[in-house]
Image 1 (cartoon, rainbow, N blue to C red):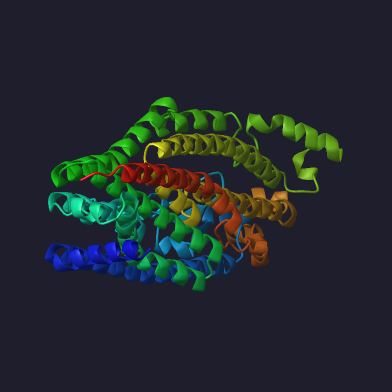
Image 2 (cartoon, rainbow, N blue to C red):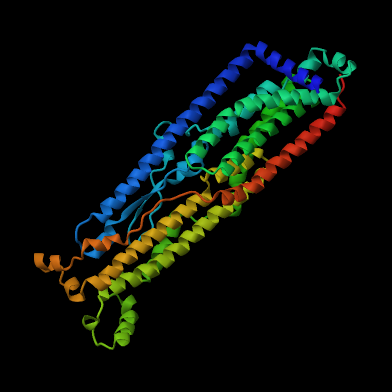
Length: 478
């Protein structure tokens, strides 16, 4: 044990002598610290701003004066999605999906105001997050510092004397591994800060801790991989070339191949073609604004028969409101059909890409990180579904007020002067059909469950490479 500690201490002494190494450590540490603090402050501001906007949107809707209920259907309402606490570490797909939606009758709008659109105006550079630093750039630092830890002994011809003095290859390997582990522990402190801070802001301790451990696993994979290459090659140039190639393949090439494979094997229909087919289906349902539309002829007959009357004027309820309600129900069913089909295809493509985690640990950690942070595709889909449920409920609530609180005669005579408009209004208390909307992340166990297969892949990566390193170390020769 003492020899392992001495070897690790000597490695740190070597690093401390190198100005380039010290400079790299200072730059990366400062960058990690700066990004972590900046993203934490931005998250708090975004949470406060969106919750305030949500509250303001609800007050604005509820404070509307007496109106015709269908005008409120088109007046619409906004919903906002506050970022989860762990978004300070990994903003995930939120940067490209949008955080707010406008809800109105007869339509399903998509989320808008995505950060990525604003970034395009600044040259197309993506936002720098702690997750991006840990997953993309820290492996490069580990490669730069660790590719020569064993090769240096070989090139300085100190490996032979070490082995002849009773230091085994395993001890040397473990000593270098302890040094690399201490380096990773130091570099992981900002991630630990994000996890602890998010717990103070309401995040589950389980997800925060799992996210931290997942990132440690990922960095350890790069450390043992660097050691394996350092112990099996004969020159630093070769080791650096091999590790750089592995980094390029893992972080840049394989993810791109995965995306291309998902698009090729699971193609999704273009938006224009989908909209054309959907609009064609919607036209068959009739126009809910026109009670005389032939699409509602059978509905009219069934109502007259049900209430045993001869005309819609004799119905005890507002026929125009009933048509609007029925039309909204049928229309929503069709819109949901297309929306669910699109979301399922997006999920299938994401799962297809995730299968490439066995070729690239980067894909495994990035997927697990989004799952745990609550910024993954599944969470975005749940936001869309909850927003749609709110939209449908308040639109149908307003249609119910249209049916029950406004007479058919007043409704059809609403354009006959000022008096007609006044009679065609209902009390603003009816706007209280709008429910409060506060979007929260999935429960901790559900997020951990989604991330578990990816974390399992990382663990297998680590065990396999570590095992290969130990086997190689046993056969280490000068």
